[in-house]
Amino acid sequence: MVAIVVSLASTLLSVASSASPSSSTSFLTKLRSAPSFRLSFAVTPLGYRRGRLMAHTIAKATLGLTQPNAIELPKISFAAKEIDVTEWKGDILAVGVTEKDLTKDENSKFENPILKKLDSHLGGLLAEASSEEDFTGKTGQSTVLRLPGLGSKRVGLIGLGQSASSTADFRGLGEAVAAAAKAAQSAEVAIVLASSEGLSVESKLSTASAIVSGTVLGTHDDNRYRSESKKPTIKSVDILGLGTGPEVEKKLKYAEDLSSGILFGKELVNSPANVLTPAVLAEEASKIAATYSDVLSAKILDVEQCKELKMGSYLGVAAASANPPRFIHLTYKPPSGDVKTKLALVGKGLTFDSGGYNIKTGPGCSIELMKFDMGGSAVVLGAAKAIGQIKPAGVEVHFIVAACENMISGTGMRPGDIVTASNGKTIEVNNTDAEGRLTLADALVYACNQGAEKIVDLATLTGACVVALGPSIAGVFSPSDDLANEVLAASESGGEKIWRLPLEESYWESMKSGIADMVNTGGRQGGAITAALFLKQFVDEKVQWMHIDMAGPVWNDKKRSATGFGISTLVEWVVKNSS
Image (cartoon, rainbow, N blue to C red; front, side, top):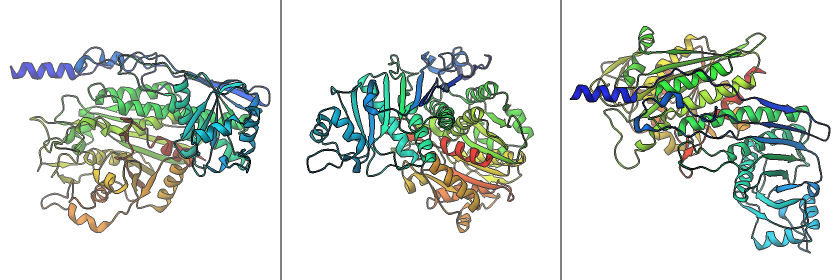
């Protein structure tokens, strides 16, 4: 009976990988006569290729018989225009306003030129309605009014807070406009800032890009696992007052490429562990390489190949699962020109983490959310998808994921076992639930062996980092000030929050073993720091290295969905290294 049950379980949990790679989505852009140009694109994250997500892979034997729904490909047309806001025709004219923009004179009239012009055409109704609605322009506030007197059917006021200047501010504006358009079932939308006259040309470009990215992300709903779903209503978005021409076109193309990578990463994290096994994750990585085969190549290693590379730390974690591990390595090489810098992005790829024999139990353990323990790998593969489209010059990038599950069985790793990493260092496993660092150990050694000069690893690694920085900020650790400054600058451009924490060497004392080179976890105090110190043991001293602990911002509890955090930062970092 046991043999039959094990055989049946193995059959149910195995995943075939026989289908051909899906085709890439085309990006259409046409430069039209001044003062505007129009471009349209269809974002194809995971789940939108030919309207299916991994269906060929899971149709034969998925636990629970779950198959994602076929989803119609959304398509949004974007245009950058320089026209009078009162002449624009469509469903919603959305105006991004700060608290200062809403200042009124002694006659209760707007002082801001754009709001004043709109209010004049509306006979003072906009000022009156904003007061009645108690709209003050605070972040998160919005009001949509249906008022006669303009070409647009509705006017929306979207609050930007006291001021707005960052990528996150304007991406948030795009998301808020998308939400308003959904609620009003609107197809044609325009977005304008009440105050854009003070922005430099470069600021206008980055602002337009952030608004487009936010609109795409805000429009997207992950409905693959719902029995019923609504189709997106937005068909076109006009961005007014932020310039036109080839430079804007280039920035909006960048926003498209980045958004497709973010959506791909989000859908990877949202996918349940019975669908997204290590083998399926490897297949999705291979599809990215096949789609952008002019610049990307894929190498997928199985158990035997990992044994040849002496990856005992990684394989120790994988040993308990009926789903075999897959070691993923994508390589980006520019289509032309010399390679000046070699980078590596390494992501933790635990497609499910039970905790092993130190099983996750009790309130707050979040075992039901441990599908997101591959969030680091989703960042790496989402970045690979974006980089495959952007095609930066002068930089070679290695995307590396040691994918597996951390389960419980008679073949599994036990507390007290000693595993040997591929650099020869031995690790006494004093907690099987500190498994991510064990997989990253061999992945980091592998990355160094590829000749990478700079390595960034990302992982949902410790609860300690969430306690320290909360749910929206990632902790970063690096012995290199230069690399830390690079990534911090990239995160600011990408609109994501990270905070540098210390690599306190004296804390390593708690990581010493009586019988091996080290243990895999220290005490409760400084847990995020000791985890980073552990990873440091597997990086060549000549290599610049950074560890990003993204356990907090990987998931949005309120929305009960993945955030896509980290992809913007890494893409920005790679692109800046290419210039």
